[in-house]
Amino acid sequence: MSQKDNLKKKIIILIVLIIILAGLLVTLGNPFSSDKSSSLIQQFTEDTTTKGNLSITVTGDVMFGRKMPGVLSTTESPYRYVSNVTGPSDILLVNTENPFTTSGNAVKPDVPLKASPQYINLVNGTNGTVISANANNHVFDYGVEGMRDSIKNLDEAGIIHIGAGENKEEATRPVTLEQNGHKITIFNYMDSDNFKEYSSEVMPVAGDETPGYSAWSDTESPQQISEARANGSDIIIVYMHYGNEYSRSPNEAQENISHKAIDAGADAVVGAHAHVTQGIEVYNGKPIFYNLGNFMFDQSNTATHRAYMVNFDIVDENVTATVYPVDIIGYLPHFMSSSDGRSLLEELNPQCSELTITNPGTGKLSFKLGNNTTEK
Image 1 (tube, rainbow, N blue to C red):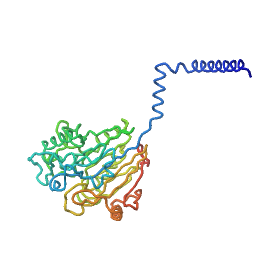
Image 2 (cartoon, rainbow, N blue to C red):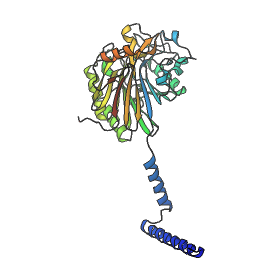
Image 3 (spheres, one colour):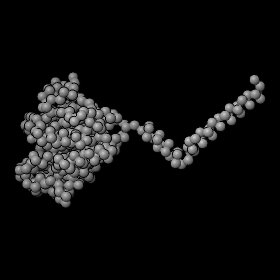
């Protein structure tokens, strides 16, 4: 074929392509107009954006007062023996069983706890975000003054706090984080029926215009959880302070509260307060860890020296919860041996058939975020 014929062929192909493109422009309109291009960009972004992996670790009771300073150092992390789990977590959630205050005005007549503000940075055992849950029976041991000191000190240390505040709106407000494509909401409540023997001065429930802790309400709390789900939260954790101290099994109130929280849209309920471990239940496809036990505490009762923490690994909508049994040795957490870990998990009450106990002595269960996977 001559060079002239090649040139003619190329021209014909070019003309055909131009005609086809013109037809598309007429059919679709101009895709490069500002409105069309922005919609195409938005569609592309929505179609290609995926949720990244996320790790959330939850521990039991943490306390830095009383005899704890004897094992604490401001230059050494109290998480050091379990840091391979807590350190890489994107979010670390702990139950802080003391106000950080220098106040000497204890209002609680028995076992008032407080910790020096110099230890506040030790709450943080992660490279990610740390959250201090304060809806418990010690946050007001030194009155409203102690609570305010503690919140101020937590704020200055860059530690997020939930569960107590100047009024009900502030105390019950959850923390909501957006990370790795996920919207995470964490609530913190205490079952006030456990502490009817204390006056409102010693253990005040937050009111519309009065300071206090976040008390679970069978009507208002589920509504808050449902609203979080409706507002786009795809991970909802409810951290409860409930149960009877030193009881190895949950009471009826714990079961009712936990079930109501999951029915309202919670993906997991985690409990603290008993100082000993309680069992695990999967309800409506979602896990309830009734009581983790202690994590950093100076109690002498040997029953309080066995505990567990939970790590949630989230990949898209799939969650693997790993239960790590720990020994409290010298007031600080250490991983249990494989045999001891298996023994602890096998003794939990209630037993959870969905929990797989591994050879290394940890527990694993899987579930999905969002709508419950089991019919009510």
